[in-house]
Length: 186
Ligand SMILES: [Zn+2]
Image 1: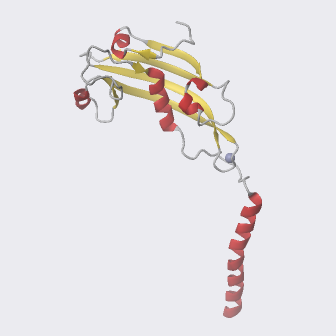
Image 2 (image 1 turned 30 degrees about the vertical axis):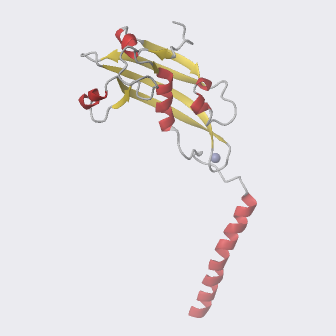
Image 3 (image 1 turned 135 degrees about the vertical axis):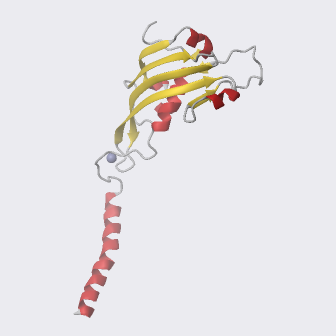
């Protein structure tokens, strides 16, 4: 399989049985929900992925394990310049097609109930569950996106003049008060 081909929509149980594994890099632009948050061009940004599907002993749960890593340029909330944020995820997801199996999983295991959000009729077992693995990986990375990305060290650049004035105005009354206090006390 060429390194650039990632299967988009798969039947997890079938692919787990075949021992699906994938390692390689993909353009970050394929992750549209992450790309939407990025500032500037991400045309040359890559995401590296290692992942595999495996089946539990009872062939009821498919485990989707892997590692995904990328860097996204986001807007620094302090200086409004781009800041490169690293997203690194080690995921361990249970894919089940039957909600009752969730109880058998470890309490802290992340799981996806297949077909839950699909429009297909509930209980229609004739249609094998289909899953978009890239979308699952993207979900994991989106959880890691900081709400307020910032450089480790940078300065306010937006409206510096106004901020300086505000600060001076805020500081001055205290100086005046301190001065008066000193005079009253002396
Ligand atoms: Zn900054």
